[in-house]
Length: 105
Image (cartoon, rainbow, N blue to C red; front, side, top):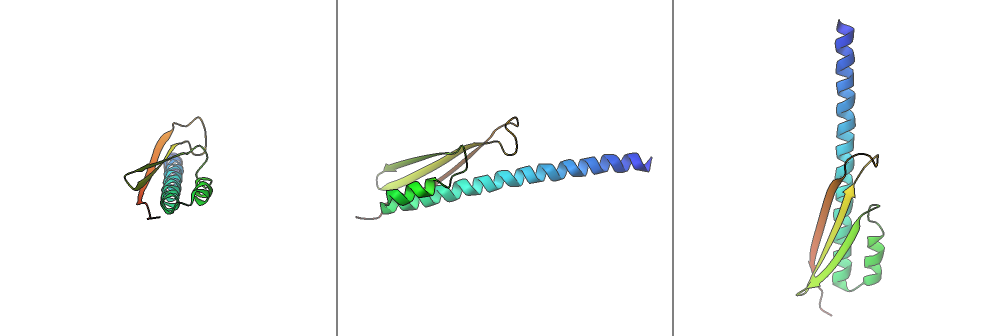
């Protein structure tokens, strides 16, 4: 009797560990998207397009980066449909953005 209860508790604990690890992976991807958005916005605000392209290269695989400039404000959006660990898992939409005032030329 105790053995069956221990087996079910062990399975539940293993499932919880896997779920927490999956969630942490999503958080790391979101942090990477936010970092890319901030760096691209900063480089575009400085007018350094080559550095902005290098910063875009650090984006997670499958992420898209959109850059827009309006009224002296550089706005960068990074969008990713995250599927960590397996492509058959449901996609989790991640969105990060950053806005920086353009530096005077």
